[in-house]
Structures are given as C-alpha cells and as structure tokens.
Length: 636
Image (cartoon, rainbow, N blue to C red):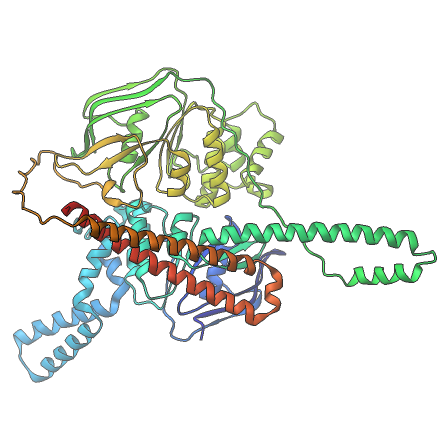
C-alpha cells in the first residue's frame, strides 16, 4: 500500500482555489522533488498530506503506523533548551532507556538484587536492539556534517542564529526513526559542503523522501520524480529537474501547437457556419455547430509571468574598487578568521566569495562596506562608489512600515501609481501593499528588499545569499538583471547554478597549514570537490610539519592506465546512450495521447525508472574507476 495517497484533493480559501483535483502518491521507493513558484501551494499540499489541514474536496489516505519526519520552513524552538537536548528529543526511546540503565546501575551498586539485575539486563537488550550503542556516533557525524562541534552541544538554542536553528532541526529530523522524510527548503542556510553532504545522505538512504527546493542542482542530484504545482494543478514527471525541464518545454510546445491548430479550425468552422446557417447548406452548418459544441477545447498554455528587472547605476565607479594588502581580520573575541589576504576587485568584476558557514564570508562583506575593522594590513576603497547591499536577513527593512511605505520612502517624489506598479512586478498587489513588513514571509521580504535595492541605483552591489527564499522564476529574473548590470558585483552564494551563470572571479577560503588564508582564483573551482573550498579552523601559529621520508614506489605500467581510461570512456558513452533513451521516453510521456493506452504509459514510466537506476549505477562505477585511475597515476 502507498504511504500517502491524495485523491482528487482541493483546497479553497475565500473562493480561490489554491489546489484543485490533486492526485498523487508517495510510495515506499519515492524520491520526489516538489517545485512551484512561491504561493503556488507547496506547503499547503504538504500539510494536507500530513493531516495538518483537511482538504475542502477529495480525500487523503495514509498508511497506518507510518512515521513521518517533517522539516518545516518556519520553526519555533524552546530558546532555553540546550542544543543537544533538542537533538536527543528525536530518539526519546533510546535516551529514555539510557537514563533507565544509568538509574538501575546506580541502584544495583546500593542494593544488588535479582529483580533490578533482570530489569537492567532487559533494558540493555532493548537499548542495543534500538541501535543505542551506534547512535552517539550517528549524532556526532550528523552534527559535524551540519557545521556543529561538541562545544556547541550545551549551548541554549537562543544563542544560535535563525539559520543555525534550522540546521539543528534538520539534524534532529535526520536522526529520527522515520518511514517517510519530507523536507521543506532544506538547503536554505546550508553551505556548499553541507548541501553536498545532504545530497549524498539522501542518495544513500533506502527510505522514501520528498523535498521542496528551488535549487536545480540539488534536485538533479537527489530526486527521480518531479511534482510541479502550477495554476492550482499538479504535473507529475519522471526524472530529475533537468528531465522535467525538458519534458515541460516539449509539453508546452505541443500544447501551444494543438491550441493554435484548434483555434484556426474553430475560426474556419465558425466562418462556414455564419455564411451557410441560413442558406442551402444549412444542415451542414448545423452539423458543424453541433460538432463545435461537443469539441474538447485545448486550453491556451499559461506562460509564467516573468519579472523584468533593470538595475541602473547612478554613475560609473573608478577602475580599482577594492585593494586588500596583507589584511588580517577576525571576530570580537580576538580569534583570527583569515590573514595574509591580498586581493583586488576591479570595475565590472563579478566576484563570488566561497567557503563554509562560519569561515568569515559575511564578515569580509562588512569589512568592504566599512562596518567591520581589520586587525592589520591595508584596505583601499575606490572612488565614486555608490553601494547597494543585499542582506540575507533583511534587517534593514523597517518592520513597522507597510510594503507600500517601504518603497515610497526611497522614492518620495514618485506617484502612487508608480509605486503600485513596481510592487506589482515583485508580486505585491491588492491588499498585499498594505501589509506590515513584520508579518511578511521570508520570500516576500526578499522580494521587497530587491525592489528597494533596485531603486537605490548603485554602481557596486554587495549581496549576501541573494537567492535564499526566492523561487526559480524570481531567481532567474534577478540573475538576468545582474548579468546585464553595468557595475561591480561581490556576492556570497551557495546556489551552484546561480554561481556558474554569474561569477567571473572567485575569492575562495582555502585550507592553509599556517592559518586561514583567502586567495583569489582565476578560474572556477570544481564545486563538487569539497576539499578545495572547505576551511580548517587551525591556529595561525601552527608550523608546517617536516615532510615524511619519501618511500620508493613501484612503477605502474602505462598500459594499465590506458585500459582504465578506455573503460571510463566506455561508461561515459553508455551514459550518453541511456540519456538519449530517457529523452525519447520523456518525449512520449509528454504527449497526452500516450495516456490513452494505460499499459503503454505504465511501461514507459517503468522503463524510465530502470534507465535512471542504470545511470546512477554507471556513474557510481565511473567514480570508482576515476579514483583508481588517480591513485595509480600518482604511483606511476
């Protein structure tokens, strides 16, 4: 039986359909990516699946005793609770038994009796059966992977930032005993290394999951089915996001052609009817009129509204925007984050700062803005700079103002119509413009902040996680505007797609034997190879250890390397062939006529699943061969 089955479900608020005739299932092998624009109903659908909301029409069937682990976007945690206690709350069974074992052990020291000894033996057996011995290692592994150390365990949750609290919740949820995992925007507040770890965690998991995400690369690397919410309806496509994107484009093109052909036919037929309804061919005209009344009308494809942004500069800056010479910076407690920094930012550079959470990326941005002092060295700021800053937390927004007043104070001379038209471009219309900023969602605040930023007419943009909380359409609009921007951009991001399309230069936090150093790179680093971008918090004074004595290595026959290379090339060709097969199947699945033959549609979906599994197996084999090749290359 399916874990969750949604049948003809709908949700209506104040006469508006948020969801309509939704049909989908979550199976024991589901790996689903739920996508859609902000406000399309993704969180509503999840709440209906979980039973937190009752649909206004249709029904939801849930398997009995199905344990669901759910990471919501807006979480409320007990501020005074130590972090480790929240993590431990995910396994009350294990920690309850651990406390019982400790209590019984102490009691036996005082009064050794057969009854207490039997109870202790039973508790230990249950503890071991639940995996209690291994659980502590799992806790440490998950917490370390999400950027926490043992020093963080006793800290109260109130001391952690909002992003860190989200990661604490994610850690607890991943450690729960669940049958189904549902994650709503899990990659927000994760750096590239953490996102890569979560991708591998989900890829290796043998339990079903559904994730809501706007991260194309993350979806490509984790899911094999896409649920797309649009216009209150749900479209199900087999494959990852790239497969969906191609199938969706084909389906829209086919629907547009069908719509155009049908409209031409209707126009010609109506013309014939109007000319002959009262003439000699009246029976033919009536017959065609009856035919039109029975015709199933093809709906015109609704194009997603594109927001066209244009970021104008107030004037050109100088050629040298920033020069950092032998700079060291740190945090107020005296700890050094990075030193020996020698960097330059020039006019029209698009610089991406890359590194794990906590390494000092935001601190570096504040140094560039003059809001944080350096410890030593020299920082030279260029002339004629007009700075626009995008803060990922939007703390510059006044929460007591309305949406309309927030923009109007930036352009006080503008007319009401001008302000309303600009807010409408960012998704604020009707009563939305009178909302106070304090009650807006994270996505709404991000859109409003962008609207304000554009009206500052900067020639230098400094942006901290600009795509957080933005859906794909808004993120694409922002990307296009930044690509066309005439000024200089320095930004922090963990969105690999966004980075690859915008950045022309990188400042990367690297590991350094003598401390944390920041280096500019002249080419894009491989974002999948985490050792190149991870940061080790080593003490700056650590001296470089002498190299170990060289060992005499056995030479590797070059013929063996060539055989490995040939096998790798053959597997790459195999993947190309499998992708071509998958593209053909997706093309057929995108054709509505395919579904007139239920058996054929089912066979195609099963074949698509098999091909995706073959692709995953082949990629795994390639990774093993490449590791072997590199190792033998070093020995050669």
